[in-house]
Length: 131
Length: 361
Image (cartoon, rainbow over the protein chains, first blue to last red):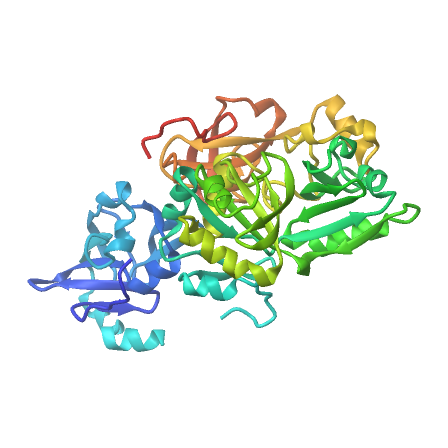
């Protein structure tokens, strides 16, 4: 678990989730949880991935992560249809701790309403919400 | 931030120095894990040595000419069998045979016993003992503040402590005073991890120096989370999860720690349940697919999970559950309702993890 970081290239949801809008396709985004979320959770030992093709709704949960001590819902920052899940996490859930913005990505979503991104905040605003 | 009313052990500053994540636990602010993480802590105890601050656990000293007779009436096991310098596990039961606490008792002298309580039960235990002491020539002292307790556990734990002890350490289930790193300690050959090791009862003022020396000699600081995964892999009961006032020792599989002929409080109920056979039994289980069952999850068709986690050694979900007695047999397939999703499991034999088994974890 590296030091706290909140990359500037993505958007943040108050429930400690991030969305990275595909630079070449504003209708496609990758979701994951923030450094703060994985740190609060502790070592993740289980990730229950959703199914490709299922839909996700902004502000509602779409997956579960479990640490040694607790289970948490993962909240969708934006709405859409899941087009890819990070199946690597099924065998290596610790990727969520080791690299929450890289190997720890959870799903890729074809957005149903890209304008929902206006409700998310940038890294600086998210960082200050944690202070 | 934790409420200011939480109690702190004398090792609080040491925990902070070692990067502990501190959480409220049974009225105490305790380390749940350190910087290295739960998995590393767990593995250290399974393969080398770990040290845990368990100073939140309480101590009760019972002494006097009536000490043995009194404890025999209070504790479920046969107290007369504890030799001087010996240790024994027992339950404290109420009249209905419900479990008030599970505890280790050490006999320090012919008429002097030290009993270690669970933090959450300590005050109730003390009150219960005092309430029943009338007519016995016995003195009951709440010794919680007199001791810090360090659990040093793992295959290398004894070597680490032996190197700073003035005499050979007491064996398993034995206890005795030693000078450890220049400080007086009551050394107990007991633990809660399934590994060899010792528990040290020391003056709280001496605990930080002992902690640092034992860490310096190679024991990894381990928090409560690793302690929980370690104990569950070897099916040791946790009060509040697997034991409660609502259930008795026979149901919990602790009939071996009950000697009804000693006429302890609750013995009649325990005897009746032993003879008739319990209607439910605590069993260990392993998940056969993905998922982790947790305390409170229902077993479909009857039963309840009382402890559950992901086993760091076995890399599967494990736990313990109370099941209707007719289903409590090894190999019985189970379906557990984990927050609305059915997870497959199987009743396993005790312990879930055995030290000599190689695992691919």
